[in-house]
Amino acid sequence: MREISVLVMASTDLAVRVLSSIAAVDRAAWDALEHGPSPFLRHGFLSALEASGSIGKRSGWRPVYLLAERGGQLQGAVAAFVKSHSYGEYIFDWAWAGAAERAGLDYYPKLVIAAPITPATGRRLLLAPGADRARTAAALIAAVRAVADDAGCSSIHWLFCTADEQALLAEHGFAARATFQYHWHNRGYPSFDGFLGALASRKRKQLRKERARVHAAIDGLTWVPGAALTTAQLDRMDRWYRATTEEHGGHDYLRPGFFHRVAAELPDETWIAEVALGGQPVAGALFFETPQGLYGRYWGADVNLDCLHFETAYYAGIERCIARGLPLFEAGAQGDHKLVRGFEPSPTYSAHWLRHPGLAAAIDEFLDRERRAVAHQMTELAAYGPYRQADDADG
Image 1 (spheres, rainbow, N blue to C red):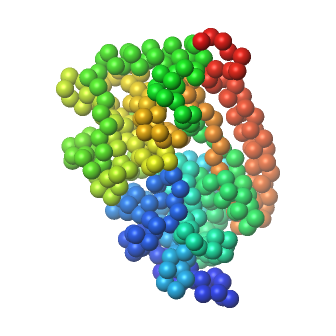
Image 2 (image 1 turned 30 degrees about the vertical axis):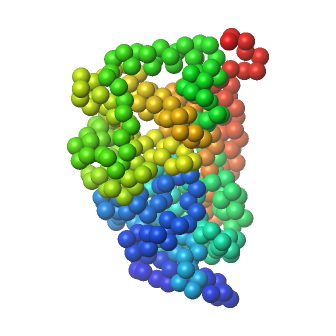
Image 3 (image 1 turned 135 degrees about the horizontal axis):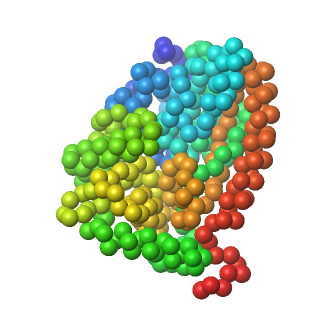
């Protein structure tokens, strides 16, 4: 896509520029925007994705950075991506693409506003503190539409946005979609045992047995910050990530070099929980941490130990949130097995616009049915959660 400058509000001095690389964007100005808890649209994370080739033309994620400026000062921004496929999004629209194909319509390219390859909720309209929020957001939404027109996109998809952004986008003609993940919420537990005390007796005993089994089998688990990670440790994380992806039939979207780059770009937010056995590292999980939350991303192991995955990817993260007073732990997409381990069904949000009126009408009807089904499913799942009920007197 050519670099363009779009004046979307002719009656004001607010203009939106479009750039094709995060390297062309001032890092301090971009990071000074309000990102919320999630670090996945920070300049460093996007830079690591670009530099490693995890996003870019060959990956099918072609970056488009929209910068709303007034007098040369950044007022807001959007990270968008022209997509030639639907991989790595985790808000699934394969059925929509199939319906378009059967109708003789081109579904790709499409425009996606998301943190690439990262199913974590976060702000998608990045606004500067003190900006005119309504006018800046409207300018950026209009500019996103202009980019979609310019690139010949069939549709626009805001993925894992916040609830308030979804409501705002609905006012601008975007259809709301309801989905959910399993998140862990810190209710002020004094310790991991305090958290276990909130569980029903049978579930509490299960978690204690799982942890005891792992702790008896390993030397220990150490949290290593990004600034201290060695090349060897990052090489291992890369190897574990690819092995786990292959084992589960997934796609290794993150290209070699990503883990090294992201640790260098985000040394304070990047952590690896590393497990040792016999004096050697045998497993690990990658996390990102901000003062508002912990985000578990990838894990892998060289050994097959019962419950090691639960300890490394879940229990260690819960324990860390309690110790550091973090209110939220997101451990990735999907995974019904998280429910019994203290993670609760939590809503996630997206918003969609489709160019073809007939396809848009059909999807609107589907989304209405889906919202009811998701609400019912979340209610049913919550009833099977591990937490003690008010009338549970099991101690």
